[in-house]
Amino acid sequence: TAWHPASAWAALTDLPGHRGLQVLGLEPAAAGLSAEGSAGDGGMEAVVVVADMRDRTCLELAANLQHRYGALCRFLDFCDDTGLNELLAAHPDIPRAEICRRGGVTAVLPEGVYFTSLEEHSQMLFYELSYRLQLAPPSFAFAESIEREYLQPLRALRAAEACSGGLHGGTWEWWWETPEALQLVSHSLARHKFALLDGFLPEAEWRDLAADARREFATRRMTRGAKLSGLASSEAAGDVQNVDVKPRKWTVRGDYSSIWQDEDPKAGANRRLVRALDALLARLRAAGGYGGSRKAVADRLAGADFREETMVACYPGADRARYHPHIDNDRSFIYRVLTVIMYLNEDWCAEEHGGQLRLFNEASLPLPPPAELGAKYDVTPQGNRLLLFWATEEVPHEVLTTRRDRFACTVWYVDGAKSAVDANGAVRLCSHLQPVAPLTRDEALQRAAASSGQLEVLRTLAACLPRRRPDGSTEAEEVVTRAVLQGGAGHRFGPHRCDDCGAQATCGAASVDGAAPGWFCAVCWQRWAAGLGRLEGPEASETNAAIG
Figure 1 (spheres, one colour):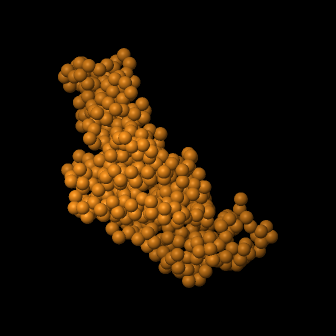
Figure 2 (cartoon, one colour):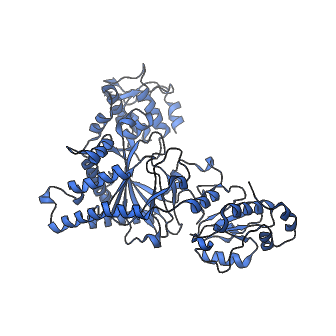
Figure 3 (spheres, one colour):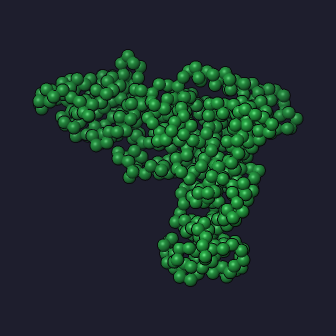
């Protein structure tokens, strides 16, 4: 509830903004405000709140902020030209019109990101302030233990392999394939839920990958992450996705990304990356006679026979981009097992550039506030560093504000058997995902299927669906999936005459939607679903029109 002294309200009627602040016990923003601000002796950076101090609603919100967060907030009246000029000089990328609003409240974070329309939607600012006030940074002692127990020994192994002039006589292609390195990675994953590998790729390979990522962003081929998020702007008040893409305005996620397909002939660097990643996964799954952490990790990865194609992402420094706490299994049919991130940033300095990936302690869903989660470890996104962690609520994480363009490639490994029993998961297996090498797609489907009947369904679905990037199912895919998965009297496998092309085919499905009754071969289903052709069976016009 809003707080203010009841006796003070009558005195505010004819007072200028600063005097109104003083009557309510609010401290104005100090003169000479820097880009980092100040929050007194506590060492926290101040959040500047700009409000119309002649408006009752604005004053009540300002008083509430002062009551809850004290010196973490500094206050300016929207008519205080001197204070506003100093604020905007420190943050020249913020439009003045967004900050100075009659009857409104805005706020500017120390890193130069702003909120607006807080008089209507203040919940995100309260979240942000609580985060800053209550969340303790990760333990320095824990970071030291990770360095001592894992990173230093792994660096020593890499240096030893480099000095030996070869990888054990050609036994291994990469230095991290040695049993000692795999043991360290498995132990870290089993005990701490994450693992780090520095120097994952040869120098020339990761630099080629970084150059491709920079080119992808520079040529505007990336899509803004907020457009891909499961949280649509209409589902949450306060424009948490910054729908109009205003520079420096607060948003849940500020990344841009695109998908690099395995088959892309121009993506040679990515093919080398996924070949190395699949090899690492195969090594981690091959526990052999090992026990303990090696076996525990191998058991968890046993069903991870598929992977999503590489997502390459940029967090623009000019936007102060960030991605707030989340987990990677954010939808019920995803069935991700392991997240793997390859960082592509040369000479990254966490103190100067920010952009760390913050790992939180294990949680249950729905995720509690960050302060309740507790910060566990901050990963600096330095070039040629590989990060692995479980893609579950065991590892909530966020990307901290970045002050320099930050690039990374992410690959998710997916459980095939769990996906196969879910209609949406099965579509992903058969249309969106890649089998993990050295498995072929059919071998991976065989491992995912619980029975011969389920395998036949998966094979038919894979034949009928077009291959494409995983950005959500289309209506056409849903029609195909219903035809293949629902079965029934009009559905059967085996030789049949296609009601579209007229050919005899052994793989296909009968429509179960009624608008286009008939049996169609896999080639015709795939061509139709991809939009390259139209089914011509009896009464097919209604279905074709519905799909567009």
